[in-house]
Length: 80
Image 1 (cartoon, rainbow, N blue to C red):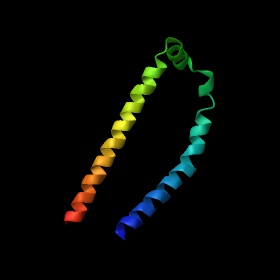
Image 2: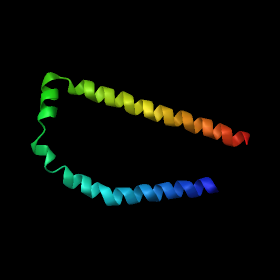
Image 3: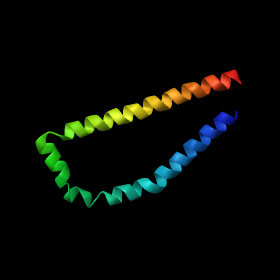
Image 4: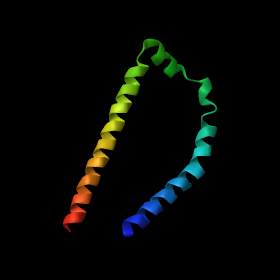
């Protein structure tokens, strides 16, 4: 039961975060579209794909790490 209440709290907190900060993020991006020299250079050289690939590997590693921790926590909860 306690885990369900924690999940509800996390869901509400993430919804609150999205409602408060996503509009600010979109406002901040308006001026960025005019000045993308670094992205243009990376795209012209073909290195943007390398950057995206490295970011995808890092993101996948974080996801795998979190899944592994979750499995260990579930195992510990069953044992206790």
